Image (cartoon, rainbow, N blue to C red):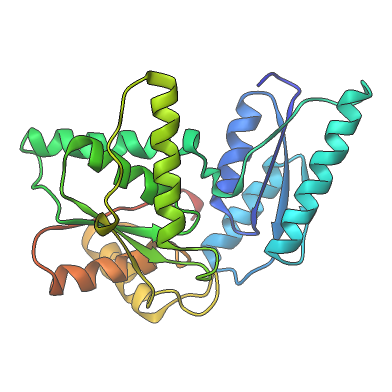
Length: 266
């Protein structure tokens, strides 16, 4: 990517992915075109949306996720046509959530860091890691990283979106695609994620994307009181509720994976 290029991505109005994309694109001198659709917004999500609007070069408003996909296709077509005509700039597309094999690699590395901490005696080997499950990039990367490290740690995704878009099968496919990507680049054969090492918790969804869950709000209040953490209602609070329930009912250490900290948006 070069200064003056554009980055095209999509997400809900309160998408932290859109915010992160816009922030890093601006750091590299690129403008961000974000296609966004409305959903229920918590105060943290509104803060994310406002900050993203300040950083994005252009916001394209869609009605639904399906409409957003169509609008992304139109923007990509228009950008490619202008570039071929010599009147446009290079436009880089970043898929929803950044959940591509390349984007997943950071989470693979994070799992390897956990494994190194286990070997060093800094923490016990987790029986499970619990995290929000949306576009599946984090879960796929952690599951693959644990497989590479030889840990028996299970990855438990707390579903935060509609089941048609958030699934165990999609997560396993993304983990396998990431393994193939690494193999092509490195020539090293990687283990695959065993299906029984990945589970999805469905009862913390809340009925709509972005809708707070009472158990999630209780879990968020507890972690704020005990650890000073600020969780968002859309993702991390729901995963925290699932993590607390598993910690109370399932054997072995449960590790809650905090994917978003809202302290900087207060």
